[in-house]
Image (cartoon, rainbow, N blue to C red; front, side, top):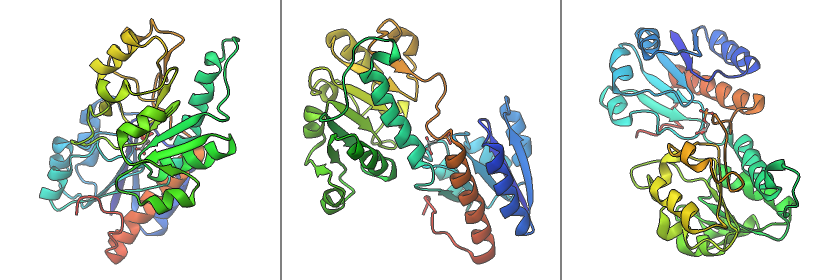
Length: 305
Ligand code: 3PG
């Protein structure tokens, strides 16, 4: 049984060692394709793989089509918008993610980005504090919840909107649930995005919503660039001199926004889940899920049901 780990952005070595141990202890073979630069490398590596572990690597219809033996794809992480689910389902391939495994790393970065913006991007000017500010968490999944946990320690006033999570869960975390997304945007000094990218959410963060943000608000995006309507983002920068945007998922209009130097920052390359801990957690969970699937038919984290 061949388990292919295909990562353009490789896991930390310690995580790869852990994945190898899980795979080899199960009697399977680990094949590594790291830092590949050409899709053809992935197409040929996947050709005889039985299982595939990826990060944000694109497993599109062509990749899935060229994988003759593939039975399972595990996205070592949360968002599986990089995998063509209909193509996988059509071939009877099980697709899973590893929910929660890298969420603390992303949450720490989101809070770090808030401090970075509050302190004038560490350029030595007088800034502001997070304490007492209103934090709006848009989607209260694993990352949203972890952001709330950390923000509590900073003394932030925390609100969340998530139609799929019960109010009781938020209240139990000392987070105030709000009834609508508009209400959340209206009150948030810091708005942290944690929605997935799918057909419903793409470009859903538009001007009508953004313009509700209070004066001096900072939008923090450690989720996906696709959820933002970029025309709206540009309009916000043009019409609201107080608006700030910090991102770990650079927008296509990145170069156009660079002129707003004190109000805009994006990491050059997505690094939310780039920690040894997140790599170990998500990578080893992915390997264990594959072993459990082959040995026991366990499909617990399947997302293409
Ligand atoms: C995720 O969806 O898990 C995060 O965006 C991390 O993505 P990465 O594995 O490409 O860093």
